[in-house]
Image (cartoon, rainbow, N blue to C red; front, side, top):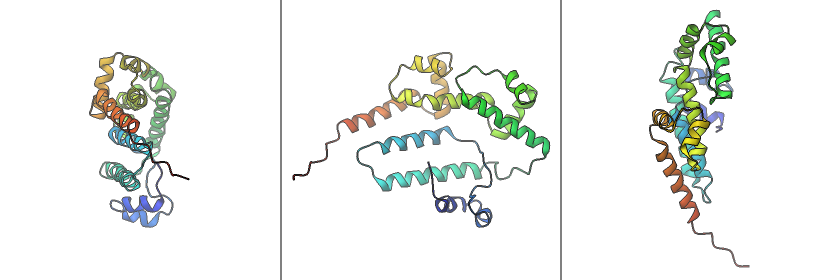
Length: 214
């Protein structure tokens, strides 16, 4: 999703007016912050609405701005703004954490092991676990599980067999996948699938637009 700088500034000014007034072209004072899986699901549902034959532009724009507001609220009402300037050692840990995040994000279904991940960035397993939670606001396992769940949404909505989806995404079983899905999104896969099916049925039975007579 992309927003104009003016739209972002209007939202962010509520929490960070001094920065908005000083920083042209950079409405956020930081580059990374934890993302909420429920917001991602709302975004995907908004994209699904855009596939419908008729689009209510007002409703779409309103929901897009509501998502932007909720993202900003999550960032600014959390710890991101209050994070102090980090020293050289903390910067090293910060960079190491984002290298690990990138490795996991490149293949979330892979069976990542802690020791090789830590060795790749020059930290001990203990240091990496502590640094990752401090920087990202969640554990390594939670981050990987969240990426797996978000990556499964297309297959879930498409009606694919959930056991097959679970194994493809790196989960041990259907039940493990369902538990993680509910933990991440607050609803089971069946609820997301049912909502997607309703949208598809509504599209299938939508009356065709009348053809103009020549």
